[in-house]
Image (cartoon, rainbow, N blue to C red; front, side, top):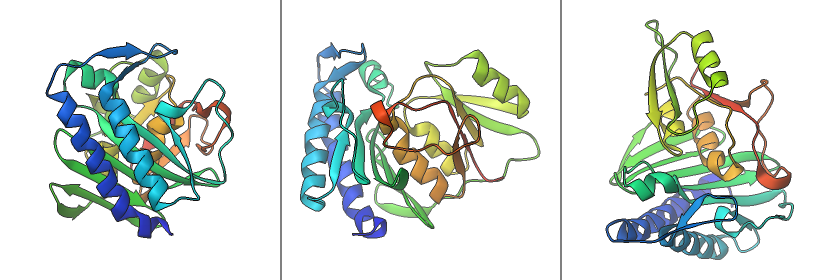
Length: 251
């Protein structure tokens, strides 16, 4: 199946996972620290079960790599595989600020070809696939999205709410950024893809499941995602760790 064929069933799957997350969001829940110190909740695990079961039924021959199922020594993925973050922004979920997402991406030969980001609290879903399609949905009403050219008044940047560093500040200064929005989770990619922001530099630690869906979305919308040195940001690396990267709108 092509990325275009898979886009609609993946959207429905992400939204089902979002409904499960919201069912837990509205009640008391426990938070447990994983081996790396990051938090996990029942909502992460519920979304993981829904997504992995759905993807296994949709594409039984395609490997699934999910954040919640990767051990300390993850196996090397196949040339084509799913990359899933069932609940991106668990810290935002725990403090209940609404800035968390469901991320699903399809990777082929190191390149994200399909990306879906669902925002449970606002019922918005962003969906992009290559080579030439990006769509944004809000409560079932479709509207096309596109990255923008930087305005003459100066760029708008998005930055991590928890991981701002000196290197990020240097990039913002070099690009004559006039305003910086602090946003959680993969929402930063959505803001660039829809033309609400122009640049997102990130030099703190991230994993591939944090970025793959947003990467596909931004590129489909006409923007770019590169490693900090200008080279490609690829997927399926040993350990699934990313280098620093820069997300841009149109140039």
